[in-house]
Structure formats: structure tokens, C-alpha cells
Amino acid sequence: MEEERDKNKLTKKSPKAQKKPRRGGDYLLARDQVNRLSLYQPKEAIELVKKISREKFDSKLELHVSFLSSKGKKTAPEHRVLGKIKDKSEDLLTALIKEATVLLKNKKIRQTTICSTMSPGVKIDWQNRSFYA
Image 1 (cartoon, helix red, strand yellow):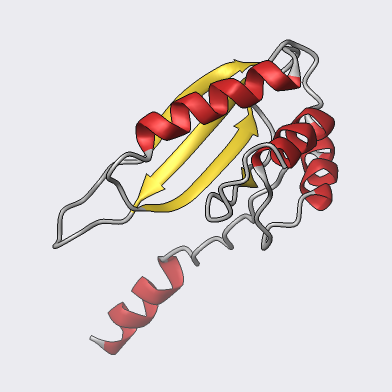
Image 2 (cartoon, rainbow, N blue to C red):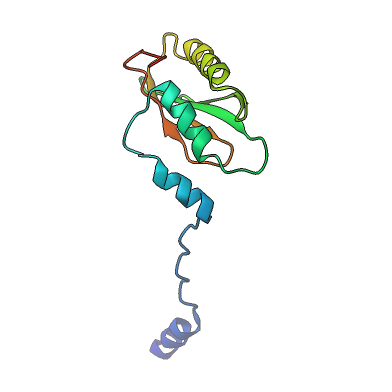
């Protein structure tokens, strides 16, 4: 019996070491420019996303909003496209404020982030409410 157990132990393959997730060099450079702990004003966030966007195509600017769940109800995050990254910053800011006011009505938000198609996200501060600062 013990010999069979030893044989089984020898024939079993050892578990493979898990691979660490890897990112491309451009993504890592863009991620280093964003402070992930701080919240940005909407105008600053749009400018930062336009700066760190390194795609060779005309990518989209996306708004991601996650809500607080209440009384055990799960709420799915909302994803909205604000426009193309090559649009004017003022147009993107007005689209952001328009979409945000629709999404933020009577809902408690947990986190709001904007990002380009293939870039890291930038968190937005809605507490100050000075959208044009």
C-alpha cells in the first residue's frame, strides 16, 4: 500500500508556478504618470487621459461608474462612451458632465473613472462639484 502511494506521489505532476500578469511598456509608462490614490477634477482628468493615451488609432474616451450596493442588492457598473480622444477637451468635458448628471441622479456612487480604450483609468472627484476648475 505504501509503495503504491509513493508511486502515485512520484507520477503526479507538480503544480506549475503561476505566471505573473504582464503589461506592455507603453501601458507601464502611462500608469506611472497617473497617481492611482488621488482623485482628479474632471477637466484635469480629461487632459491627463489625452496625455497618456498612446494608441495609434483614434480611441474612445470611456466613463466607468460603480455604485454602492444597498441592502444586499447588487448593482452593475455603468460604462458610457463620451467621445473620441482627438475631440476638443471642452466637448469631452460637456459630454462627461451630461452623462454624469444622468447617472448620478438619486444614486450613491462608489467610484467614477475615465480612461481611453487601452490606457489606465483616472479617478474623478465629484465631491467638490467644481466641474470647470
